[in-house]
Amino acid sequence: MDIAVLLRAVPDPVEELELNDDETDLDRDYLGYVLNEFDDHALEEALLLKEDTGGSVTAYAIGTSDEVEQILVTAIAKGADAAVKLGDDLGVLDAHAQSEIFAAALGERSHQAILCGVQASDEIDGQVAMLLSARLGHPHVSVVVATSVTDAGLSVTKEYWAGITATYDVRLPAVLGIQAARQAPRYVAVSRIRQAQDSGALSEVDTVAPASSSGVTITAIRIPESGAGAEMISGDETAAAEQIVALLQAAGVGGAP
Image 1 (spheres, rainbow, N blue to C red):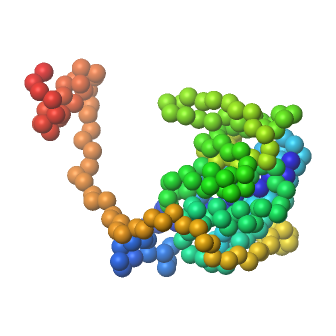
Image 2: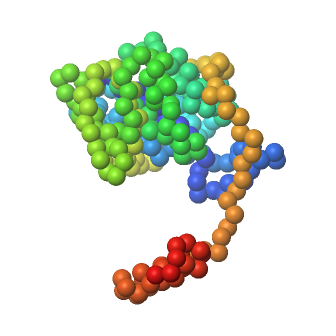
Image 3: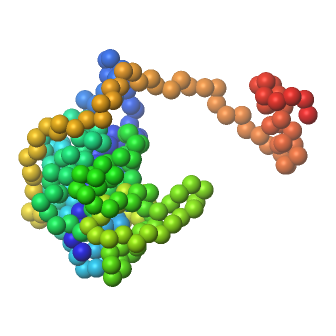
């Protein structure tokens, strides 16, 4: 099976995030970037499918930064057969623009399965997989937590609310939004990453500025205000319940017991 996995660099959540001068975006000048957590699971699921079928995996990412290159080289070190860096540096792109770039890169290739993270930590809208599937005309399933190969294509497990799951038979080619891989993303040693850098498996394809956009304009972003902190409740069930009722009443919620 020929598999594509789409990866994205997102701001490192361990860093202190600050807003730009007009408070419409993060101040990205000095931000560090890491692989989006859900895309890491998509990569792991792609590698598991490769191991199941004896196929190949190609990783794609948009951007020309050193962090993007590091993400793609690490994917090769983990087991991807090739990686493609989609330049130029086009700045912050919404889901519509991302799907246009990925569709242009993937449209002439014969990938049977295209995997990406169900959403990205810096936007959390979960639209890239479904927009890409619409552009390519492929079936789509998101919030995927497991896949397996069948004679007709893939068996895909989708998670709904409250832990409810459903399994679908999906014909290929298809686009999947991965929420969690069947196992935790694998670790790769630094020595293997260095070997991957010299493997020649990373290539770069020029891209043009996408015409697509969601049409949404961010007018302002605010940093959440710090509160007083949580109040810890102790004691057995009866004592805890009494404390909760007293707190709710003090806040003006409900009437007398």
